[in-house]
Image (cartoon, rainbow, N blue to C red; front, side, top):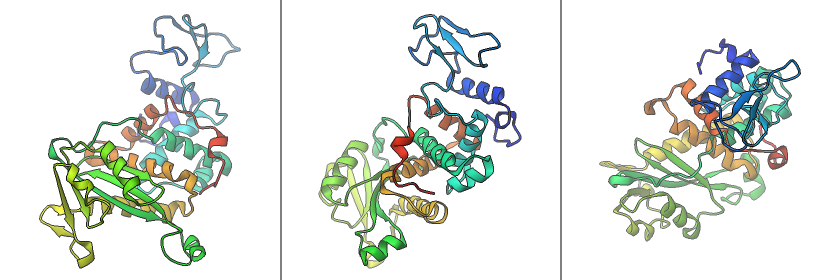
Length: 308
């Protein structure tokens, strides 16, 4: 898949379908319903649309979009691929209003498309981070709005806590948590880090006892103005939070708590597919399209707390 916006995959339905088939089925067509490969044939005839296949094992018909977030969508696949490219290539995200204007679809359709694409960006089961004593920075932050702050009359009651872990030179994982307590934070850290990890945190007492479970635990004292002590710091995770907040405040502006995990998946995806790890815009978009398989997101699942 090329990053050139003049590419036919963004204007020609057959080219878009063939591009998605090449990404989803690099070794040949696979039945989207039973997983068979041996008895697959194209359904021919004027009454059948291009890209319709028949499986001799399960006797079913399918296309490349079956079993993906694009299934049963009336929006042209060309627009789906363009929206995927735009969302994966924009460092701070791109709003549904902008997608609506650029693609010529309704705002409601654009909003639903962006949430489906975020679902495709979401990672599945992952191996623990921090192997071989690699340093992993762990920190929490709070996401909220000015309106929420006014309603809550100060404090953090209007904020939504987010916990993130980032391996230096590697990937980040972010989690929307109910509250910032040891009971909520500790299980996530234990589940996502190897015991051989060296964890870096601030002086928060969330990590005091938890840190003894790992190979080493180093802290910086933000309360006294200490941010770096040799290679001990949390600057990497602070940078991740900074990009996320600029995107949420400057691009998306409003986010219902029901959807926060999808935005975290989006920003994690872009960080984990950054240029330093060997990705360009085309590779990022292709990664999203591969991640579209096996995921469905209905309008009812996204219908609450609409965002921009």
